[in-house]
Length: 232
Image 1 (cartoon, rainbow, N blue to C red):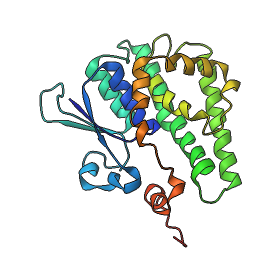
Image 2 (cartoon, one colour):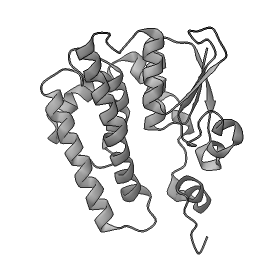
Image 3 (tube, rainbow, N blue to C red):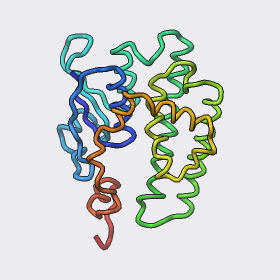
């Protein structure tokens, strides 16, 4: 059994998609980010960077004590190796999946996260920051689109953990006001993956919990962004 510590965010959905795609039994432990659950000692013992998602594998391959794993990219690799799925064994194909997985965790996710923050959540609209991260977001969409114009999936002919890592972030395109139609290969890939039943189950996990935006509460903003407002 996999214990999934998560919240309904793009990074969290990466792992619920993978669990659904693999058919692994799992139970969810919701982490209430707006209430500061991510700073609780029992969570930090699993995820010392106080970020979701994290997992605990209660049935590890070595038969030993439960294995905690934090960081979404590391979790995807762990689950792929545990199940032997969505990560090719041959050298060249595996290398390509790893490249695009790390491209997501080092670029697409962080840059879209910053773009979303300054566009949607920042209490003061800073034109320089918004423009800076929007231009970087569009550049990354261009990288994505050029790759997908050559291959049906990010790392070649087969669906992989690289696609699972990127898709939940591309899902934010409407909220982030990204003109997805300007990236036709990415749009086709997005629509194709959206038809996968397991992916849909993964991204629907926790939909009923998305009921408050960070900008709606000064205390939530303080917890999530570490910013103490002078008049709060």
